[in-house]
Length: 472
Image (cartoon, rainbow, N blue to C red; front, side, top):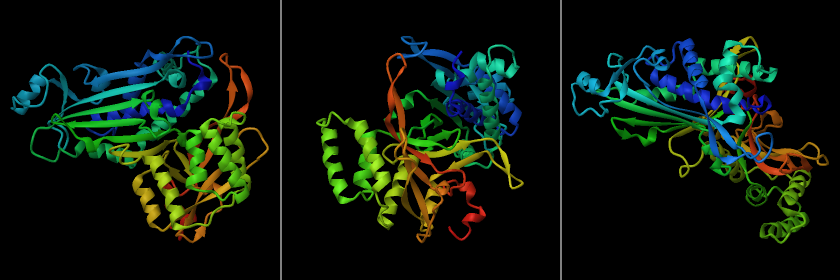
C-alpha cells in the first residue's frame, strides 16, 4: 500500500475531476443527480490499474524498482450493458444502428463501435463517445484509488491508517463541493462546449477526450501545465478552439514553480528591486561568475540564498508606476493562464474545498480565478506593487517572501499581506544522499509563485465583500 503521508489531495482530485468531466459529458442531464455522478466517479476510481513507468525509484523502500502510476483509460460507452455508463440511463447503439436511425449511410460513425444515442434529447448530441485518460503518480494518490479506495468505501477494517481515512473524508467533501458547483465557470464551460454545435436541424456525432495526465506534465520545465484537458471533435473534425484546459488545486497554494537562475534574474534584472548601488555592483559581478561557472565556492544555491536574503533585508520598494504595475500584472497572467504561443483554448485555476458557513451564509467550496476576472481587476485602475517581507533573515530555510500587493484604483495601497494577489518565495529543501539520509541544511530548490489567501480580491467570490466596497 502507498504511504498515506505522501498523499497529495490535489493530485487525487485531478483524476476525480477528470472523471467528473466525463460524467457531465455523458449525462444528458448535466449531472443533475449528484448521487449518480458520485457512483460513476467511484466506480471508475476503484477500477484504476497500476502500471510501471520508465524511471526507477532512487531511494526509499522501493529503491531500484520502477516508479508506478495509477492509470485509467477507457472509451465510453464500453458496451451496451456497462454499469459505468448506464448509471445515467443513456441508450447505447452500434454505429450501424446509428446510421439507420439517422437515415444517413454517410454518418461519421464506425459501424462496429458503440455510441451513446440521445436523439430524443433536445439540443444534445445525437450520437457521442467520451474517451477518458487518467495517469497519476501512485505515491501521491495510491491510497485513494483501486482496491484501497474500495476498502474505504466499504469501511472495511484492517489495512487503513488514520491518515488514509482523513484523506478519504477530506477528498469526499471536495468531490461533493465539485458536483454541487453548478454556477461555476468550469461547469458552464462544460455545458457550452457540449451544446455549441447542437442548435441545428442535422444529426450530430460528437467525440470528447478528457485527459488528466499528472505524469506527462512533469516535463513542463516550470511552466504551467494543464491538469485536465478536454478536446472536442464534431462530425469527424477536430474543433481546436474548444480545447479547454483546467488547472486544479485542492487548496490555495503554488501555481508556478521555476528554476533558481530564471527566478533570480527576474528579481534582479526585470524588476530591479532597489538594492543599494554598492551592494548591487557586487551582486551583479558575482552573479556573472556564478552563471559562467567560475564561482565554484558559493555555487548557484549559495548565491541565490545570500542574494535573496539581501533583497528581503536591504532592498527598497520601488515607487509604484504604471509600467512597473503592468509588469507584475503580466507576470501573474502568464503564470496563471499561459501565453498565446503556449496554450490554446481556455485555462482557469480552480480550488476545490469543503462547503462551509461564513457569517451565517453558505459558501461554495469551489472558488475560481479566470482570465476575465483578472482583466476586470486591471480595468478598475488597480496597480500592483511588491512588498518585501522578511520573517527571519537568520534562520535556516525560507527567510520570507515578496508579496505582490494591490493599490486600489491606483490610489489606495493595501498593507495586509493576507490580501496580496500573489507572492513569490523560494522553496528550501534539505539535501539527502542516495539512501535518503540528510546531508546538510536546507538550500534553495525552486522559486515558487503562490496565489493570494482566502480574503484576497484575486478570488472572484470576494467581489461582494464589504471590505472591497468603494475600492474596485
